[in-house]
Length: 429
Image (cartoon, rainbow, N blue to C red):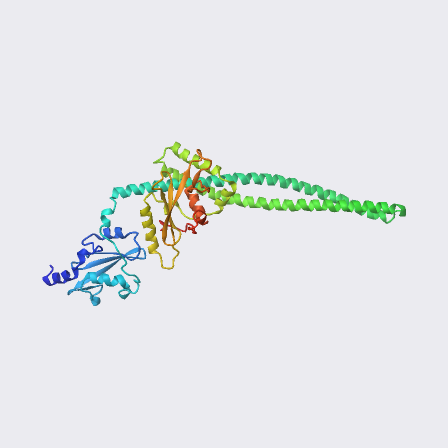
């Protein structure tokens, strides 16, 4: 039972509290925790505590929620019985809005920066809507992942077949050169033996024949040297071709586990997408990717194979086409970064809000969020196909390849004001 004195004390501390957007009253802890999820450090809410008359400050710190009890006693409030220095909860919050909480706890080098309004609860989606949107995102991430895996599998398979043919050609040429080398060495030995024989004859030959024999000896030596040089060249070419064959063997061996891994990933994606696609639809999707990969320039395909894929599509693909929501999500990450952190290159890719079938890249640069349209061309109806920045000529078979390339090469060729690579996917945990 609460006595009248306690009520008076609580009433004093409540003064002005109901007008504050950060005061959520009597609300379950789980609701506050869910509302603060994903918010930048320094975001906070105050609610009624489970102990009558006290309050709970929930503060976002280091990407997690920190709960701090606000004690009320004898008309004063504070975080500990020894620091009941504030007449109102509003005064306490205002003080720590401009002063660090390290005065209360040395490990809390943070202020109450971003009050979270209770009105956010009215904007939260119902569990069914949230579940439906999550299922939609899972589907699109899986589809994007399957496209990327199929493209990579096709690319490596084509490269595997190409260098296998190269190896067979080199092996055949190497054997031919080796046969040449053996023949040259045999002929060279024959000429060298003849030279030895002629030099022996010189010792006992008549003077009148000496000049003739010397000329023959010189001619044999020149032929021997020429053939010896040809044998040496053939031997060197054999060594070079053997080295090239060894490189091909190493690449073939390195390709096998990659192909096996991609094959398993492809089967996994297909299995999960089987709930949304018929077998013929899945086959057509993979055929379309193969068609795009087949049209790639060999040098471009080899470049992509040398660039590792840094991130899974689930870390950067959004199904929400709303531009303002994308800006808000990226800004949340910007605000949560340390002061000296690199803030350029935080990005996501979403469906275009204005062009059906297109996508948009939202990316940070100099703490401003830019949006770039990504068009898609069907290779069966266009000279070139795939994904590319609007009005550019560098097309990629999949969005995975698009992200892969621009994670290593600057976007300034597309937009001089965007001298950054894709550095940090916004959904990367």
